[in-house]
Structures are given as C-alpha cells and as structure tokens.
Length: 490
Length: 90
Image 1 (tube, one colour):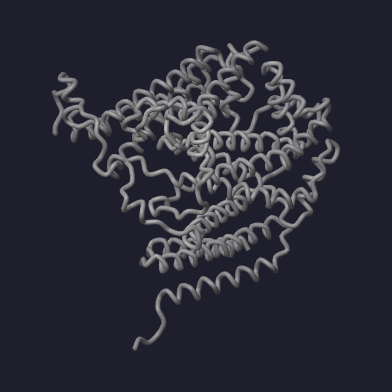
Image 2 (tube, chains in turn brown, green):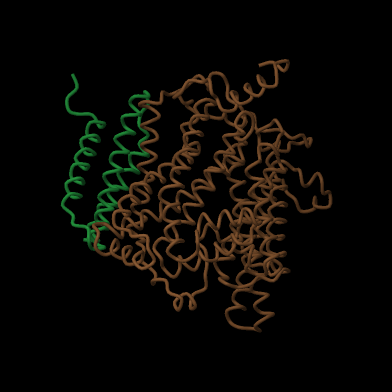
C-alpha cells in the first residue's frame, strides 16, 4: 500500500497489516519460540480451560441466591465427589491465571512485543487481562461468605466514586436494582456467561492476529537461518504445548491437594461487623493506594481511582506511547526502569496491604514507602544498566549475540533480588518506626525496627559488594569516580 | 545382531505401565474424604507426568535429538516422590 493511495485504501491497508486479514492460518512456529517464556499466555488459557471444566461441574450444584449460595457451596465441599478438590483447583487456577497473565504482560513489556505491527494485539491482550481480573472480582462473591461479601461491597463502593455515566452503567451491570439477590445473580451471570464469552471473543481475535503476524522475533533480532528453522503446529508444537499444559495441570493438582481450601463463615450483617474487609491478593495493591489518608472521602476516592485509571490507560495504550523503533532493553533504559518500578510498587503495596488490613495510611508514610521504592529501583536500574551495557569508552552496546551472557544474567538477578529485599526492608523499617512513634516502645515494634534495619544494612553491603565485583571487570565506577581508586584491587 | 531391549523401550514400557496402574487406581477411589482426595490428586498427577514424559520421549526422537537424561531423571524422581508420598499418606 503506497502513501499515495486514497484515505480509505490507506485505512484498509493499516487494518490489514495490523489485523492480518489476508494471511493464512496455523503457520509453523520458529524453533526459538519453543521456550516456556513464549507460552505464558497459552498457559493462562490452559488455566481458563481448567476453570471452565471445574466451574461447569460446580455449576451443577451451585444455587445463586443469597439464602442458598452458601449452603450449596457447603454441599459441594462436603457431599460432592472431589467437591472440595474441585473448589480448590478452581480457585488456585484462577490465581495462576491472573499471575500468568501478569507475567505474560510484563514479559511482553520488557521485550517490546507491542511495537509495530502488534499494537492492536497488545490492546486486545490488555482487555483480556481486565476480563481476567473481572473473573476474579465476580467469582469471589459467589460462595457468599463473610470474607467474599465484605470485600465485594468495598469494590462496589469504589464503583460509585467513578464519574457519573460510568458509575451508573457499572452499578446497573453489577448490582441491578439493588438488593443482595439481584447483586448475586448478576455477579453469577457475569462470571459464567458474559465474561467467558468476552474472553473467548478476545482470544479468537488475538489468536487470529498472532497467526497473521507470527511470533515476535527475539529482541536482538533473528537471523534468516533461525527464522527458517520452524516446527509444524501438528504434531510438534501441539505435543510441546501439551507437555507444558500437563505439567502445569499436575502442579495445580498437587498444590490443591497439599493446601486444600476451607470455607469461611456464611455472610450475615452481624458477622460482617466483626470482620475487616480486605480484597483478594491481586487487588490488594489498588486497595492499599485507596487507604492513603489523602484519598479519604468521596473526592479523594475519585482522585485515587483517577490515578489508577491513568496507570491502566498508560498500559493499554503503551504501543502508542513507547514509539521508539528499538525493541532492545539496552536502548530503552527509561521504559526498563519504569517497568521494574511498576513491578516493585505492585509487590510492595500488595505486601503492605496484606500486613495492614483496614488501617489508614498516613500520607508521609505512603510517600516515603512508594517514593523510596521507586527511587531505590530507579537507582538500582541505572547502576545495573550502566554495568551491563556500558563498555570501556562509555559506548552503549549489547552483547554480540544480542543476548546477555549468563554471568550478566546472574548478576542482574542478584541485583534484582537485592533491590526487592531492600524495598521490602525499607517499608518494614518505616512501618516499625511509625509504630514506635505512635504506640511507644513495644517488643514487637523494636524487633521489627531492629530486624528490618539489619536486613537493610546487609542488603546495602551486599549491593556494594556486587557493584564492586562487577566493577572489577568494567572499571566504569573507578574511572568516573577517581576518589574511589584508593583501595580498589583489580 | 543386538540382543535385548533399548533403554528407550524400557522407559516407554515403564511409563505406560504406570499410566495404566494410575488409571485403575483413579477409578477405584471413592473421593469423599480429604485423604481419598489427596490420593486422587497424586495419582492423577502421576498419570499426567507419565504422559508428559512419554510425549517428551516421542518428541525428542522425532526431532532427531537424544532425550536429555536430566529431564528423564527428574521426571522419574518426581514420580517416585509422588508415589512414596501417597504411600506415606495412606
């Protein structure tokens, strides 16, 4: 399609190149893509299939009404063959699906799969991620336990703080005319009909585009020879995927057998008053943001939701924001650091939310922990980036093969762990200091401060040692900071 | 002329036998109690892992590669661990 074509032709050409309308299906898969990291999304789909099978069996017994939801769930637990096991597998594969979707997204982010011509694929993938979270939100209510109903009420409360057209639409969709019966029925319908249908449609669209564009090349590029080494979909790729899927399934079965679920008490207004509502782990980071004191009240809640919406919008429209041509992380240091900060903040906020249920977080503490985490990761990323990618003359280059050497990967992994432990210990230290300040000296807070302080000190020592060891080879720091030359032995 | 059977054949026979045994056990369990559920999960996992190993052996042969013995050893080890833990549970 040339630039000189009419607007309609150019538009048609754009859609054809992005949506792959004129490409054949079921193309062979390159050999380099037969690596588990390329199949995280496929494993999320396997988790969805397992959920579908276990969910349909449970649906034979479950009754979506407030008076019978709990008793029917209890019946599944106690009287249905493998009932407790089915419930456990259903929940744990849901968790795995969310985790795999997140890992799939972050891997895609770091290797820049969202770049041309896969922009629309990325957007569709993000929508699938939201549908997956929707599964978690709607499914959580169905057992009608005090834990699930209280947490869902918090979520519904958040919806009311959204801008009017959106809030009324969502409220109508999930609560209906009001009342527990309508709410439960709508959550059930969304969980078993609307969301699966939406996910299947989006999956079909994404699969079609994947077939048309093919698997993204490795970030360092793929040689023609490497691209030519392909495997047919059947039986080679099918067998490979079957192996991964069954390994995943066996893992889920074993985890479910070792950690079986137990059903919390039934929901009642009296029981709910004795319980601090807390969302499931995958929403904890959002909930922790909402607990910051500045976001209290209707206006504050709206502001917090706006901030979170901006983060989600940035993720959805990432292909249109990160428009640089290069896919290599060495050429995208800012985006690399931003990705690590995002992961760090999500982990820190989730853990923080887990240990402070129902507590309002003072603004200063939130700024220190979130800002500290971001700063630590940013500095860590910068140091790591310079050490991994800079050569003697300060020229940024990648390793000859376009991939990092195993020693560099090990160093990177060690550094990432140090940064994560550092972030957690800073958070824990701040928590302990605030507890000491507010509640006076107690054995628990003293142990918390001393413990996290020690871990932080060891972490800093470890980081310095790692940087020192890395610098023995490149000499970058010694060259830049002359005063450090004393005592360096290479 | 070679006498005896290859290591690959032994592995395949062992894995198929394991699958048959695990399938028979799965059909005989009445999984209403937690212990029976654990047994069910363990034998189902054994069945799946045995299938994964068979598929891996087939794929390696088809791709003209020698099966990585480390994966075979790990797979067999995990099967042994599962069966022993089932005996301990029982």
